[in-house]
Image (cartoon, rainbow, N blue to C red; front, side, top):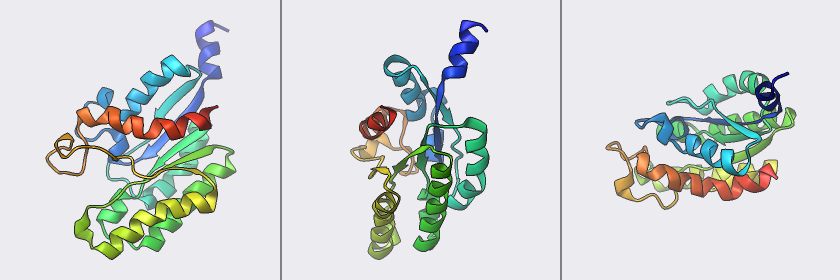
Length: 190
């Protein structure tokens, strides 16, 4: 067996399973936080390979349909789960979003993979009650499933670091997103 095949065989996959915020919507893939994570890990933890299975527009229901196949195909040691924003933007029932995410987390656990849950928040125009309940569902899921949570992946992103839609961060914001995620991811990788 060649050294290359040997090193590829020993790689441990980190599966990023999200929506447009992780798929790199509107920016070059090389600029996305997911690609920046792979570059960081090549230096600090070269045994890990990042696989991005994120799809722009993905909902928790779509993720629930796809997670089993993604786990079987990539056999991840860690799944970075970043879904729910599109459900929230559509005003989907909070209980439905929570139920779908809970079932996804159950499947990840069944595969003996660790989960890093990435929280997102909604713009205030969805009403204070809905946005409060939406924001609360991520800590609730993390506590229920005893998994690590990044409360808000876009924490500290300045208004000028968003694309014209005011929803998607631009290329300049991607390193900050990675810095929001890395402190929670690193202990899982140890």
